[in-house]
Length: 102
Image: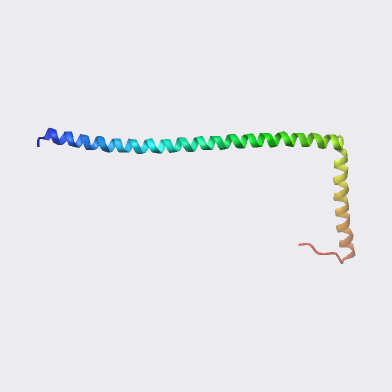
């Protein structure tokens, strides 16, 4: 066998190795592409879900505003409930027989 044949067989072997590596890389890039496409679909679905949730929340907020007027009623009710809670804690603390909270 001549040196030219030896070089030719080495080149063929290296070419086969290179071809195998290229096939492996192509498989990896195909897998990456498929994964990216799945993630894009998932992100689109999530975006659609949040958009519809935002729309429903806006409608609920608008209905609450209509039901409670400008919001003063809500503020008054919340302040009243906080006041009752604080007054009850002060009362039980002053009496001295209230339940001790950690």
